Length: 168
Image 1 (cartoon, one colour):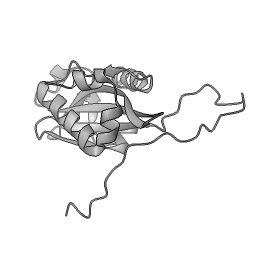
Image 2: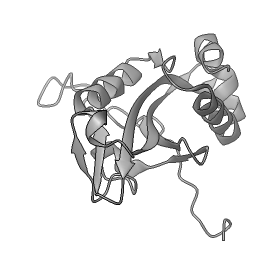
Image 3: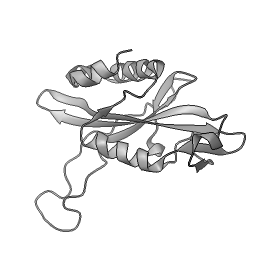
């Protein structure tokens, strides 16, 4: 079954469609090199979920998100990781990696997430920041292994801060 499943890939930088002109869209940021990774905290699994870009991942579909964690006391915990890939002289690398939490309780079709936090963390990832210090140790290990297994070269070319921050 695993052989038939299509491997999701990180978005790699495309050419700038606004390059060379100052018209509409000039100065806007591009999401071409950002990919959402979701970590299932309980199952200790990570996967690229492109639907999460618009809050339409399998974990989020059909869920009404509430503003406080207390409203969803039995929510299953997840991490949404925004991974930005850049191209340097030696090749591509993980430039920005930021994490934000959300929970889902399928039995009541409710969950918790802070939309402003998700948007701000995506922006910080695009700007090359690493924000993972608030993650639990186990999820940091899952993320580090996922990024290394996905492409060891990109991991090696990434910042020492990312590698240090994901050490348990």
